[in-house]
Image (cartoon, rainbow, N blue to C red; front, side):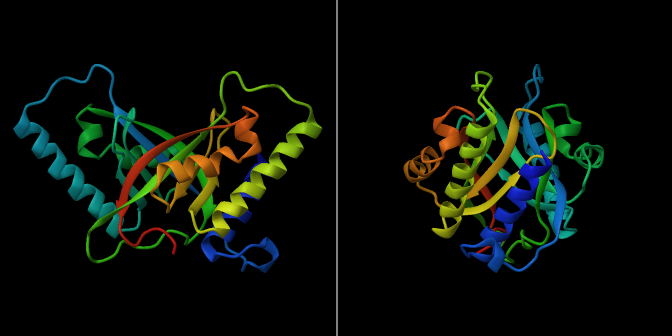
Length: 235
């Protein structure tokens, strides 16, 4: 995992700076944040309209406070029929700290949502403060997962796939389609995330399918429309 973190750290630098070679990029300090995926809790009780509205108002106020205090670096709802409701990046290094922060969120405290939390490795300062407009903008979130039936391959083949995987990430960053790439800091099936500036799902699908690790079945990418605060993603 250490090798993977180092490689993705270089990519985070590339994406932030919009250049094509790691040796040309300024050195950026790397940091572990936490990625929280909020999903509906199994068996959550049905709520009335007024109760939903009241919880949502408290939820939005709490998120605004976290963003203002820079405890939350990136957050927003997932649209469509995704199993999760929203995704939040918190500027804390441990799952325990993230869980304590999220416990105060109205939807989590009410038992309606549960949080799946992972350490996430990225470049420090990559995500900016939200624009004063308060508007949201659409991007696409790609979750990179290791399929349960991923083939076992030789070290030589894995090294070959890794080189092709990184080359594809470089290409997506260089074309300005990819805003952020970073690996998880744990060793589960969720291996990393992509955040795409491009909002054309077909184009993103074509870009991802060029990845040798994807075509070989070592990685699978789940793609979700994600509305995040305007101005937060690197230009």
